[in-house]
Image 1 (cartoon, rainbow, N blue to C red):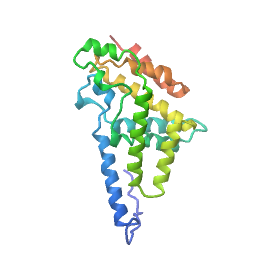
Image 2: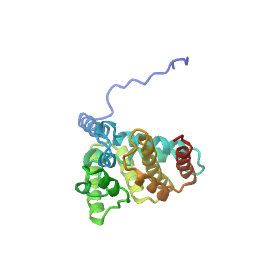
Image 3: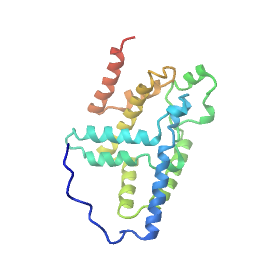
Image 4: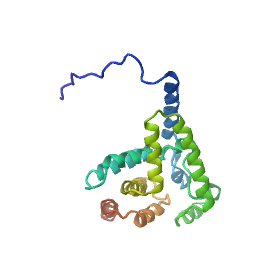
Length: 230
């Protein structure tokens, strides 16, 4: 049993934020709380029951943990930056939701064979879809940043830009971790939902995860499948 620290949080005579800034921060946290309610669209569209579908918050948490812990073993990679990038990479979805790269009206939910065929190919965003997603992200980012106090406002804005531009090793690493997490989630769903068409996540991980450590984690998961008793 660990001993309780004798240190206490220093008492403050007053909040460091004004009443207006405090109200804005409360509003921001209410918005961010929506991430715990927003289901990952790709799983819903594949027919996974809503009650069992992961939320954006769950995806972001595991992405952050995988990224942070694995990055800490890699010389030259800033694990703390990886953690921050992973935590914020999907924050704007609290406002505009999880936007898939396809038109949801085209998903044949009532036809299992057609659904499997639809998701047997990798769907890439059209220029129009990508433009609409970027516009929604930018508007959501403006709304969120307006509620944030400095200096965290500037830091999160810089993190979003860094991730969007994919110009640093840490940003590129988090992008691959994001892909790996989706692949691992597909494997987690497979035993109880073998008919869910999740092949696209394996294809994505095979094509887009090439960092040696992340690729090894991916291959370990595939090897576990091969070793499983039929």
